[in-house]
Amino acid sequence: MSGACALSCPYGLSCTAPGQCPRYVDSGGDGICDLGQPTTSSSSAESTSYDNSDSSTSASTTSTSQDQTDTSSSASAGPVNNSSDTNASAVADQGNGIDNGSLPDDPQYFTLPVSMLLIGLYLITHFLFSKGILSRQKHRRIWNLLITAGIAGSGITGILLILFINLSIKTALNPSVTFWHVELSILMVIGTLIHLHLYRKPFRNMFRVLFGVKNFKVFKKPVSILAVVIVISMAVVSGQYLSSVDGDDTSKVNGTSNNTSTSNQYQDSLNKSSSTVQSSSSDVQTYDTTGDVQDTTTTTTTTTTSSGGNGKNKS
Amino acid sequence: MVYDVILPAIPFIGGYALTYSLYKMDIIKRSIHINVWNLIILLAFIISGGAGFLLLIFMELGIKLPINQPLLYWHVELGVTLALVTIFHVHTYWKSARTMFLAAKRRSKNKT
Image (tube, rainbow over all chains, first blue to last red; front, side, top):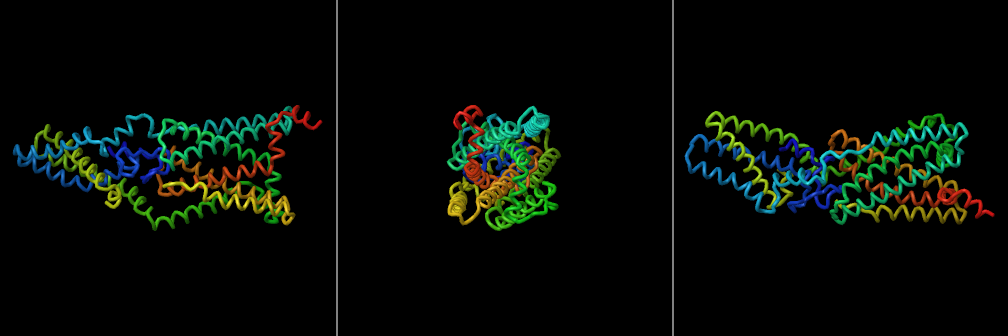
């Protein structure tokens, strides 16, 4: 369960409403994205799984009909709640995430093909320009038009996505808007790099005008400029991140990082409980109680969710 | 998390109005006004585009890091800035940008 659900959020986040990306789904209404929730629910399930395993073990060892009835009733509460109630549960969320089809776990973006196509096109036009077949003006015009299309498309789709997120608008267009935002952004990025190459003289002139850099030995290679700017931007971003770690993000970050380990612990606990039951009861009972353990944990998760979603991260 | 669109845009609109008015009043040179905004658009592009590109690579490779959240936030916020400063960029180079959309024949007709 957790292995499949761990791949739900492509960013590895557990967002609160209205989410940070257009993939935000909250079928349970607990204010936490379902795509980031299964790992959290596994952590809450992990804390309760020992109790459930104990109950299943005691049910199998005493083998009284009353105990079995109690265990089965408490365990069967899970599926009943899942089918009848509209409350959030791990099973229901997993079903929504997989069966909808509108939220693919691993969206495919054509990063490399589009980049290679654009670079190849530029090489062709540059070759034609250097041979005198294409005039400088036409060459620049083609790529200015392409970059304009890229920036306009990327900007419009990006603003649409911000509106979707801020206003919590859920439409069938969300995945396609995200897809085109990514693809047009690739066009924009590659087009901008080509734009910098086309206007490299004014680009160098910019540093001379602003910083008085007349000797371009340091800036001979554009890679060095890029490296300096990347280092500065990374420092700014990491500084911002470190300052935000002290606040609310601490619980989220710890929640996501701990949940991956707790999901493994949960699997281990399940294995332990099933092995304990196997040693004390028959195969049929072992199968049932293992299933009951899973169902009981989902029921516990439902209860925790309805009582307040924020408490999950604390566990 | 709700993204701010208007708040990050206000300083840039004010800044552009300021440098443009300073240039119009002949207090600063046109080249300084243009190059300041070229530098700003470059920085916005590098941070926003770089963050987006990193997020795309992380997503395709299935890498989930704690830095994804601030990366996504700054990608959006500086993307808004980039969109705004791109409009300023087109405004700055409007004469040459206008020729991009007009056919050469039409331009020659307009000249005559």
